[in-house]
Image (tube, rainbow, N blue to C red; front, side, top):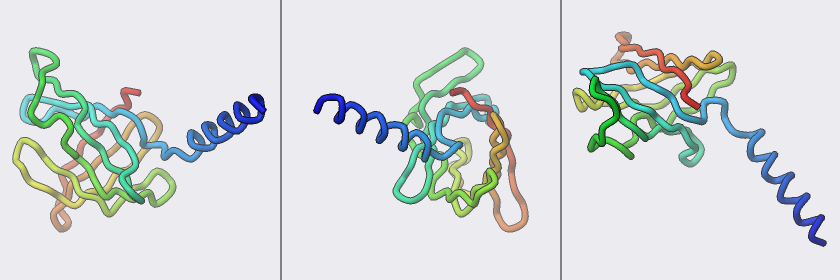
Length: 127
């Protein structure tokens, strides 16, 4: 019986890992207003979101008031490494933009858009 339960737990664990979206994990943003962050992506209901998990400036890591806040939310995977339908918050201005992302290996291109004009960053995978 113990072997059956152990095998079942292993199968469930592997199935969960296999269904995880490739964007899941920790990403390093580009510098904005003298600071950058590590953003951890996870499932948020049917969509994906990314919360600020660590913050850094020229002096190194520091404890920002933004740790734990969502930076990206309501992002939907479209297949082929493309994501859309989300929002992104720019902490330095406090503004929220419509967002889209493109994943390619260990690079995540993130855009926050108002109409046809987009601000873009390239994030790199931390883990």
